[in-house]
Image: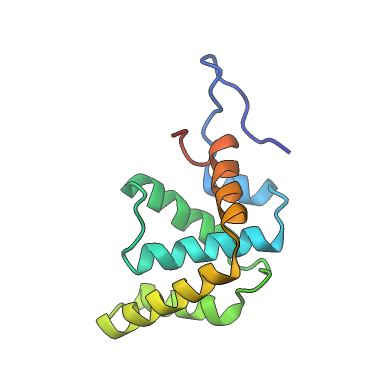
Length: 126
């Protein structure tokens, strides 16, 4: 279901991460994508603009209780620990786990997930 209604300009209207997540039907692999992006934000390697990183953190927070395909509670506990008390050693471990997580998610799945977020108005168009 497409949650973005076309505005006067024909562009999708922006949706909040929480509204989108509440209504979105997602595959477990897409939940993994949100988790992997959160890991990338935390390890400092995410190249998204700051506003998009904030949106992706909100998407993660709205989806983290849903089951993923490969990334489970251990990843969520790691993310929580890094958000509460980030430290150099923990952030290095986050990096290692993010690289591992990315090997479990195919590039097309990740690209499709990000494209969906843009198409459905969660992220701004490129």
